Length: 96
Image (tube, rainbow, N blue to C red; front, side, top):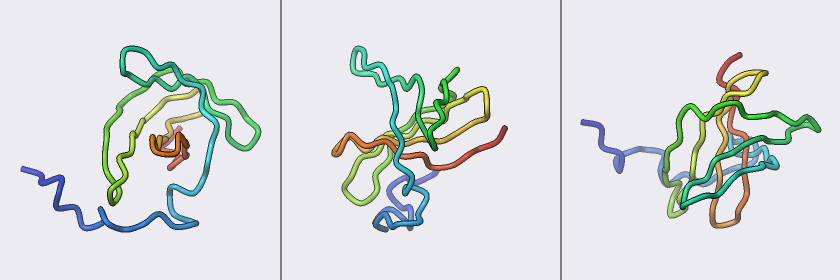
């Protein structure tokens, strides 16, 4: 069984140039304790989110992060919310 607490990279800090270095603006719905992203703005382009494929929580050091794998008409993206600062980041393009 996978031991989530044993990840070798859990204590590494975020760095400029890391996957988490692209801040984005996200429109989301918060309802009954659940966050649902609806669109995000990146490079002056608005991407409407058609579907959230997966969502999960993880920690980077002592910070809890909320990850979302989302589908837009332009492709699949992974975005993350840092609840401490209420900041969203684009992690990566997963595919068309």
